[in-house]
Length: 339
View (cartoon, helix red, strand yellow):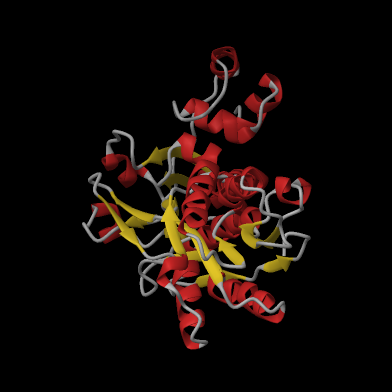
């Protein structure tokens, strides 16, 4: 009997791509020729989808039969603007391909989707901030759900997050040690989505930790906090706003590298030297951070590993684990010339 791996080999594409094409996932970015080629090869090989088994099987068989879905809070354009979540998704897809776990559906909350499809999944991996309080039947009946980058209900569901609280503490201590006391914060709006389309804002861990520590030291100034869009354009506009106010901070903590890239552009246009007149430390440590002028100090977040661990965590739940787990990954501050 032909398998997805057989089709992938004949069509010269990945097994993850074959799986999503055969499940008519329109969010997969492939050419029409590739999509048609996969469908033709599947027909030539007389491929038949394997039926889900309800009885216990060996781990190898379980990996082949489980059907999982990805629920994503971001649009494709959001992923382009900030590669953080794209890297998580790619980590999930790579790990699923390695162990033969089938991603049968990709659902973006902002799109019109029939959420009854959830009922056909053995489990879900949720990427981003999604509110489950409205009581979707899948969540009420099934605990095979892993949240990545959020942890909304630790008593029921698994989650994989990075330790942003400790990371922010490390960033501030680095700036304190360099003698900075007037420290500003540039961050994005942490938006939480409901399945019904409603959206509301939640305070980001980095912003909350920044406020707590600077208040403890008597250094917090509301005039130094700027919140906008999670994009380079957002960072650019927020830094321009900060410079227009005058009495600017001597350093800024920026919540993401794309925002920091925009902020550095605004500083360059204003003739403000980094780090001599303004120090910057950011988060994510994307590839471009090391090649900016000056190179950007940034907190390394292990996004690929977050995705892989989400898959492993879901698989262990599907194999019978009952107690929910919360996986907290450490980060690492990479100090470069920007601070």
